[in-house]
Length: 336
Picture 1 (cartoon, rainbow, N blue to C red):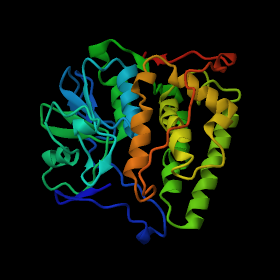
Picture 2 (tube, rainbow, N blue to C red):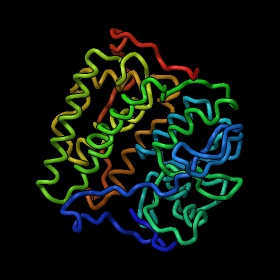
Picture 3 (cartoon, helix red, strand yellow):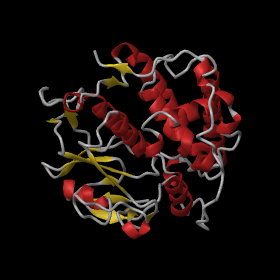
Picture 4 (cartoon, rainbow, N blue to C red):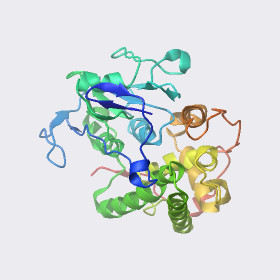
């Protein structure tokens, strides 16, 4: 874990002393947009934008990180692999943060040749200050990270490249946006980030509060999925992708490592079958690497696991049959 301060790397764990034992996630800071080739060069909130084009962008991820996993799934489902290259870090995040050391299991970095992910941030801004995170979308034409916010990369990949790929799948359909946004907000706070707020808490009462909120939300999702194929009904959307990347890590990592141990996802009939359906969705399983996932959390976060021993289990049986066909589903919408 670490951050840059005025372009200088510092190996520093999260400061929970100043926040009463709470883990506070820093917001992403590089927020330019990518738009369709013939669209005005402006993002949805008026931010600067660059046009989509083939072989202009490169996605830097960790296969272990749930936030990067969102973007990786969208890159796969939207048929962007021929247009947007990808490099992944080593599963280990040690004194230099995320690295591209091939001897530690990284793909390497064929674009910029950096050893450490933080070097991409200082190539973007020599005086960058802030946490160094994945994913990061690199613009080869301007030589910088154009965006490092996973939720925005999901939206960018959803439509910016459609005219180049012919892929018109729509994971954020206009008539469902209000519902998707509400689900995203709840799931982000209580589940996606909730496991971190639970696992990184350094006071008992803080841990218990986030633990309770996490499982209340999971119980609510379990009830919702009893008679709803996906989170918004019959259509699979970005809300499902955002939940999936936490669910697939839950039993293997968060249950034990983050002490989120009231019950496993495997103990939840609807959530477990839903997880298996999404894992088996064409294009998703290939983005999942449980070896990277377990190695990263258990061997990197030595504040929590000082022995760095990586457990051999559990067996998740993600390829096992699921029962979600009992509910009506129509797959993914298409852009009008």
